[in-house]
Image (tube, rainbow, N blue to C red):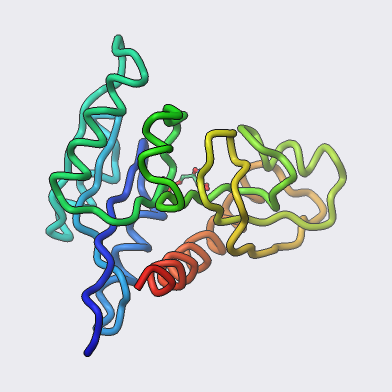
Length: 193
Ligand code: GRF
């Protein structure tokens, strides 16, 4: 018998292009996952409207003025109420508390715009250009308490071209992110069944 699709919750903070790509891929009849909630710590994140148009329930609340653990407990409650089994961070620009991560061990994926372990944190494209790297790329990894540090499950590479700026390189990498994340999330979802 075919297993039910894994119930995925996606966390965003911004425009949500990776989220949109994950949602689109999940609409294929044989997708091993289904996006059941999109949550944001930014109330006017652009991605929320995209999710709503796709018919996915959204939840958004600003984290400002709240202790991290308290905000993450709200996120946790929303995800559990929706019977989420797997979380995908997609441009979620906020560290998750150790308590939250402990409650979802091996159940949170993130996409990071560098060839990890290179360039954890911000400004990855500028750092790759400044280092004179011939290649850049993106990585999907399992989230652990250390920033951008958990086991890498998939990577894609692009060349760094002469004259690249952080913006032109980011755009080239982003094209790869969309395809890579959809594939990696599907593979990971399959591994949970
Ligand atoms: C992506 O480059 C992602 O790798 C990084 O933040 C950006 C989010 O873009 N973590 P989007 O919101 O998915 O369009």
